[in-house]
Length: 427
Image 1 (tube, one colour):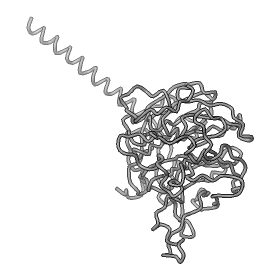
Image 2 (tube, rainbow, N blue to C red):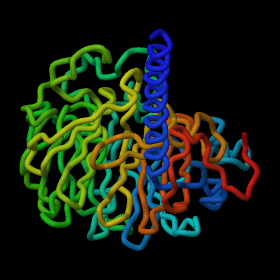
Image 3 (cartoon, rainbow, N blue to C red):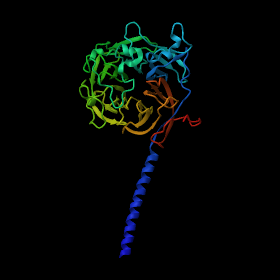
Image 4 (cartoon, rainbow, N blue to C red):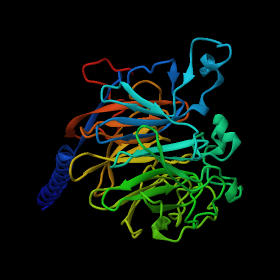
């Protein structure tokens, strides 16, 4: 009888081991079938700029219908030693700030440049974000707070590192102390077309005439409406007619009426905040009519219908403090836009998400200044070939290209530096 009992126990144990092994095998098979886009950095892109030009904080990137890559940077963020060619007399041969708006072709050649103060419009003291719309028009915003930001210190905005564990939206300034309360629209040659909002005129998150430190825009080709992530001062998404500037609608987190009450520092252990924290950093509309909004310091993406009806949300690296983890997004170029590329400037990564589930499939990048590394990866865009372009703020001060290499099984959740396979790794 004891022998029968031993045999029975052994058989049960065998079945348990078999079940565990089967589950592990099923998990491995499932993992092997999960595919995601694969990329390699192009360390030779773009080509060197002419005229001893260099970039400051590079805080916007967009791709137009011709697959030209547009970036915007802050000349005022350069250090004195980076401007020696501009002194009178010149201190040295190098260097000088490039014009704010730069256009590159696919080969990385600089083919256009313009920007700065002019007649009929208010150029931002601290420009922020660039979008080339479906008509070829160029939109920019700004998050300058006054004279300090004009000198390149960015006036305490979220483009400078925060104290550890402290969100950067705690402010005591009045609404009108925020300088950059507008978005601007230009032709690709830099001809001024329209301005929405006036400097120093914001009345807060329910003001339908002015913005308050707007971060980024998106123009819907179906309705000709411009969506604004508004932004570093306000706590909302707001929508205007893209030709006339006429106000359409606005909303806050979860589709609520926006509230400018100071929420205090972000705490990942608290219940989800019922309002956006500053900055509301990106807006992107998918082909199937879903609007994705970057609530940066709250470490989340919220998804809405175009009328502001809340659909869902997801958190990413939820324990990230400081500047937060959700900086900007771009969609993959397949018709279904199956993937989202998420720029995480605090953790110095690009995360690849499944758009339907908002699950992180894999990530690439590492903190640093070598090709394929990031220091404050701020903005992200894709071209028609599926290539990714990123820009970096803080002292990153550059644009990088990541070449699309097709779909591949996900081998590692964190890929590190995606160095070309036929070249020696920088690490």
